[in-house]
Structure formats: C-alpha cells, structure tokens
Image (cartoon, rainbow, N blue to C red; front, side):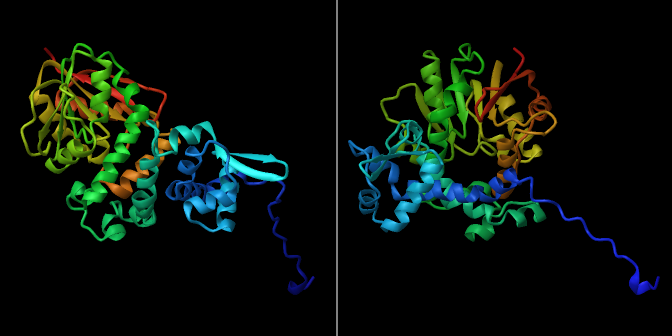
Length: 358
C-alpha cells in the first residue's frame, strides 16, 4: 500500500450526550450577579415593598424609570432566580417580592444586604476585572482598577469619603447577618472590657453589648473612620460603646481583657499579622484573650468554595489571604497566645480564640 493510501486514524470526538451543567452554570454566574446588582440599583425590590399589591411590569418600569422591554426581561430573570414571585390572573401578569427579597434586598430592612451588593457591584467587580493580572503578578489591582496607589492599603480602600462610607456599610450589613453568631461562638461573658480593633461601623460592638450586658466595648479605628461611624452608625446615647482613634500598627492600643479582630488578619501577610498580634499580646491584660473572626478554609484547603473565592478576592484587593484554623493558630502562637480553639458557626464567618496566660 502506498504511503498516500495508508489509513489515517480518525479522531474520536467527545459526544455531547453529557451536558456540562456545572461548567455552564459557572460561565453564566456573572450574568446572575449582574442581574441582582441591576435590580437592586434600580430599586425594583423597594418599589414592590412599598406597594400593597403585586405590580405589573409596566408599573414597575414607570416607577424605576426604565424601559418596559428591559424591565420585562429583568423581572423574568429575577423570577427564574427565585427572588421574585410571578402572578398570573385573568390574563395579566404581576410581580411581588419573595420573602428572601423582602428581608435581604430592600434597603429599609434591618437585615438588608443592599449595601453589600452595591459595594460588590461598584468596587469589587471592577477589581475582579483584573483577576488575571492579579494571579500573574501576585498582588492587588487597585492601581489598575481605580488609578490609586495600593502602597498604603487602607488609603486605597478609603480613597474618598464616599468609598469609605460604602465600605463601612458593607461591613455593617455583613455583621447584621453574621455578627451574633461570631460573638456567641464562645462564651465571652468573663471579659468585661473589650476592644474591637478596626471596629468600623460598630455593628459587631453592638452585638457584643447585646449578648453580654456587663461588657463595654471600645472601637479602635482610624480617625476618619471613627468620625464617619459617629456620624452615620453609632448613637451618642449608647453609653457602653466608646471610640479610640489610631492606627493599630503604629499607635498604642488601649488596655482590654478581650480584643476582637474581625475580618482584619485576612488583609495582611503572615509577617504583618504576627506583628499586630504581638502588639495586642503586649497590651492585653493577663488572663485576657483575642477573638479572631474570619472565614476558615478546610484544613487541606479543599473548601469551602466561598472561602476559596474570598481568598482570590484578598489577592485582588489586599495583601492577605484566607487561612485555615491551623494557620491562624500558628500566627497566634508566634505572638505568644496559648489555649487556642476554633469554632465553625455554620455561616460565612467563624471564630478563633487565643488566650494570654494569667
């Protein structure tokens, strides 16, 4: 047989019998996020909350100032996402909020995640546009995303008063959902004097004073954050919550029996974490403790997926990473803390408690 006549093996193409459902869901994931972002930004859920009945697409489009065609498509997608109810009666279609939408997507709800969604849409989403660069370079992308230097991390995050308030509202909404769980993960009642380092809006401080009626809490944060917290979040008549202005890497820390670091250590490298924990150990009263609140990775790093994604977000936005309980225990041990325990809350954020010997 001549060479030209030799049989060329044919490639076996994969069959399409098995539909790549999970892969397709991941590809479409950003479409779902943007649909949620847009619905909140337009105020769809707020309009429905303010109505005593379900509303038609035309009524909603007029209320939010959007095209009828665009609104109909948006409402259909929200129905598919199961965050809106669709009603059909006598040939007419109308919409209403689901219970989840009423609780978490309306601005006026005490459990609202609106500010968190807004921050993800306007800030985090822009940073993630440069995720490929972040992975290649191994550093955050604030300079490319916003044109500001990330040399001083929180100067970048707080690059304007508007951005600072948005970040504080993000934190406030998160602790409205998860705060009680993390401050009650351990019995903190023996600690009467508490200092919440980087306490931001004071939402976690409020959960502490609610759960432990005999405690007082000092919120330690940068001067401009303290100013905003007093202006927007903490009422002057709350006698058990006070403020202390400063930079926890540079300034003296107030003496306390318990220090709280909630979503702080994940912003920083291991070296910076140990530096901060050593400063806390030095200021902490004998027999005191530090409570670290973070999203914990499984010991082998295999999950949870949410925390793995958060760790990517730390790469895009900060100098830090998410860690396992063992890794946090190592940081605490390096700073002098002992009797270290962790508690999984079943929600996004978990708790690690380390003690200073009496």
